[in-house]
Image (spheres, rainbow, N blue to C red):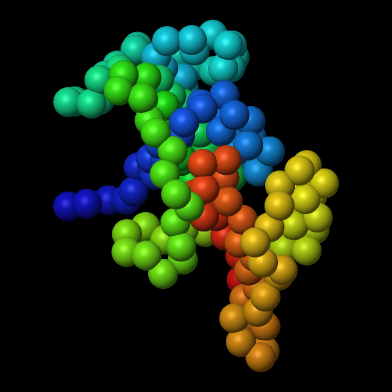
Length: 153
């Protein structure tokens, strides 16, 4: 029996830059692992350094969002040190595979304003899914081009 999703893994080209970005959104560091972890978050719970099977050396962080006791959102940011993670051209919304990561919020206009003030630019203005406005959303990207969506239901 499968119970739930443990985390989403996002490969990044610069772990320190991505860590700062996801902290701006509101993620908190739970665990750090790999070389150079002391400069990432000295207060986080260290995990032993590890290698991903067949891919070489990695370092990373496990981050969490929200505080609901039965529904933590977890994100694992990985920087592959050997071989290096190379940047890719930005993905388009219509490409096959994981299209975007959607993050629910209560006040989308307030969150968009907060993130813009912190230097994050949005690809879209806030839009509604229908004429009644049952859900409103806006798209933006992380430093490596991963598409993120803020959504207010």
